[in-house]
Each structure stands twice: as C-alpha cells, then as structure tokens.
Image (cartoon, rainbow, N blue to C red; front, side, top):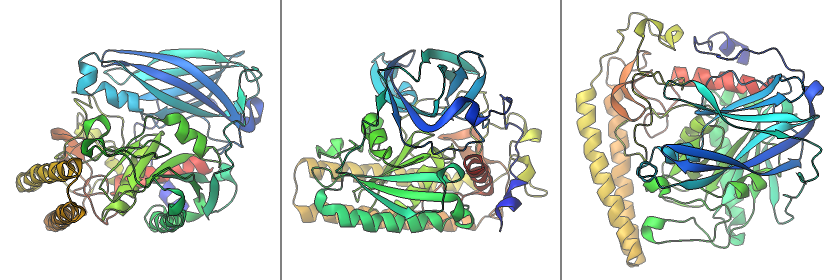
Amino acid sequence: MKFVKYLFVILTPFLSIMKAQPVSFNDYFTDQTMRIDYYHIGDANSEMVTLDHVYQYGIWAGSLKNLIDDFNNGAYYYKVFDAASGKLILSRGFDSYFKEYQTSDDAAKGIKRTYQESAIIPYPKNKIKFVLEKRDKQNKLNEVYSTEIDPGDLYIIKDAVKDNSVKVYKSHYSGDPHTKVDVVILADGYSAKDQKKFEKDLKRYTNIFLNQEPYKHLKDKFNIYGVFKSSQESGIDEPGANIYHGNVLGTRFYSLGSERYILTENNKAVYDLASHVPYDAIYIMCNSARYGGGGIYNFYCTFAADNQFSPYIFLHEFGHSFGGLADEYYTSDVAYNDFYAKDVEPVEPNITRLLDKDNLKWKNLISSGIEIPTPWEKENYDKMDYAWQKERRAMNNHIAELKRNKAQRKEIDAAQSEYNEKDKIHSDEVDKYLMSSKYWGKVGAFEGAGYSAKGMYRPMLDCIMFSKGTKPFCKVCEEHLIKVIRHYTE
C-alpha cells in the first residue's frame, strides 16, 4: 500500500470554505516558531480573549508549503494576516478546553472560568494581524478577537522556555521536520525514579503507533520524540478520590466532572515542555493505571499508560487531537450538554446528521447497494451497553470511595481487578456482537454517533472512534487521517 494510492480517495465535498492563493513561506516567515499565549474567559453565553505573552524559539516544525488550513474543522480558527497587505498567510482550525467548558452545567449557570491557550505559527518577518474566529450555531465562522503583533517587539520572550533538567529522546526519526509529522510525547506523573519506566513506555507506545494503519505504511512520514521532566511524585491527580500529586503538567482525572476524562489547565507548562523539540502534535503520557484520557483537536491529547485499554486510548485520543475526528460512541456519559447543534451538519468528517442522504460527506466510500440510513441491530446493542455503563459507573464510584476512605490496598486492588475483568468481558461481547452483523465491514450511515443515540450517524458499525479494543480505524477515518498527514508532509 503506497502513500500515493491513498490520495485519490480522500476528497470530500466539504473540503474547503476558504480557498486562498498559495502563500510563499519565505515572503512572510523565517524558519523559527512564534507562540502566542492568551487567556480565554467566559461562560455558556459569553467569552473574552486577552493576550498573555508572545514567544520566539526553535525551528518551525510545520510544512513550508501548506500554510492555509482548508479542512473546515474545529470550533475555532486562528488566522494570521500580513498587516500591510491584509493577505491571509496562515490559518489553523482547532478546538479548546474553554469551548468544552461552555457546554457544561457550571457554564450554563453563568459561572465564568479562565483557560490558557496557545497558537503556534512560523515566526513572521513583518507585523501581523492575529485573529480568532468561532463558529456560530450555523457553523459559520465569526471573529471574536484580533490584535496586531510586531515580531520586533522588545517584549517578545526569546528562548526562555529551555530547561536543563529536561531530557529529550528521538524515539523514531525520519528526517526534516518540515516534511514530517512531528509528534512529541510528554511525561507527566513520572518521578525521577520513574525515568527508566518512561523510556520503556515511550518505546512501547511508539511501536503501537507505528503498527496501526494508516501510520504503519506511512511511518517514514513521522518523527516521534519523547520529552521527560520529572514530577515530584508518581501518578496524576484523582480529585474524586481525594488523591493529589505534584505532577509537572497538572493532568488530572475528573476533568469537567467526568471521572475518566484527563486534561490539564496548565497549558503553559505543556507548551513550555513541548518546545524542547519541533512539534506538530502533542501527546501527554500519564503515569497511571486507571482507565482514562482525552483529546482536543489541534490542542493536545492525554492517556493513562498502564491500563489494559491504554493502547486503544492512545490511538483513539490522537484521532481527536491530530485528525479532528469525532467520537462515534453515544452510550457513555460525557461532560457536555448539546455538544452538537440540532439540525446543523457537524464539521467533523466521520459523523453526520444525514440532512442530505444523497450527498453524504463520505459518499465516495459507501458500499455498493447499501441502504442509507443503514439498518443495524441497534436495539439489542443499546440494552447491552447502557446496562454496562450503569454498572461501570457504580463500580468506579465504589473504587473512588474506597480510595477516599483510605481502605486497605488489597481491598482497592481487588475492586479494581473485578472492574478490569468485567470491562474486558464487555468489550469482547461488543466486538462479537458487532462482528456478527451482516453489515460488518460495510460503509453506510449507522444511527448512533457523536453522543447522540438518535439523529446522528457514523460510517461503519465499528471503529477505534466507536468502541474499545484492538481494531482499525473505519475507512472514512483512515482516509481523513491520510489527508491530514499529507497536509503536514508536503
């Protein structure tokens, strides 16, 4: 299977809303990185952006050719305009922790929160206009913030993020960062005595990544780095169990109230640590055996390293953060309310509201003769999975209670072992059930996706973005990931 072979099947009807004239990198940028840090503040009905600091460091890791992002994905875009001419010279779609907070119960109550965010761009030669745009309820982008930045400003911080205590590893290196996808895996919750464990974990997950399609046949398109900075203690925070550690990046379970959602609000620490290498995409590898992770498009992704399903989480969350893929599951609890607007087609490439079934966004991949929408054995699946979700929540709450009450270690371990066993049994039952369907392996439009049991559809019965376990991306997700890889590596 060759890279070129994939390129003929990745076009989709919604490819671009902003075709622009090609941008000559050397006309506008130097081969260094500018990081623009800002604060995103607000609640469900308000938001404000304030500039924090601007940094200059390192070489630019991205493509020198593809500077305009035409994927039409993400709740936000940041755009860079040449201040003198007004020409668009760079853009990138992304999602953010703040946007997720806006869908939470606290935000709906009017509780305002502040989140750190960063935009990474090549270092401009001349003054630029930096613009943030956000989608409205109809998915149209509108400006929410803009400011001018002079690259000669005396207040720009230069090479201040270097830390001599940090150790860098080249886990897989293929060549020039400008023509590779540069992935950095950051350590969190690894104490000084855990450094050898980090090295083993880094090697293990590099191999997992490079043995998963579409990355396997495109491994020469990737550089993978590890960056280690020791935490005060082993492990990451579990607020629901009243467990807190001095982990260097501040990752924690129970983000936005979800017990398995791992994020950090210490964005500056993440981007400072990542800046020790060229990077296009950030992983945070958490030294924990609990099931958990998280991924935000063009932001970062997290995963716990030592759970039985960690390889799945590792690949699933990168699908979010690198590919902008949506969650295809719908039975599990999430921290969001009405994440997708009703009667509006989602921008993500792998889910649809099927508002126009004759022009499905993945219509070039639909299996011959398949019915749209595609009937499947959903009723029995729902009964099975909703029952497990209820039991799973109760078991996890029990484990958290044992930890809060400082139960004996063997009692906690026994409860965790029982949970792990039942979780694996359920996952195997799901795989067996889906594989028994006559629609297994077919591309159609299967109801149930994007946290919605009704009215949202996914391309295939199963996918890494749908259920846990060792499995491929569906054909739609795989083809989209290839397109994103091409964007970074041309």
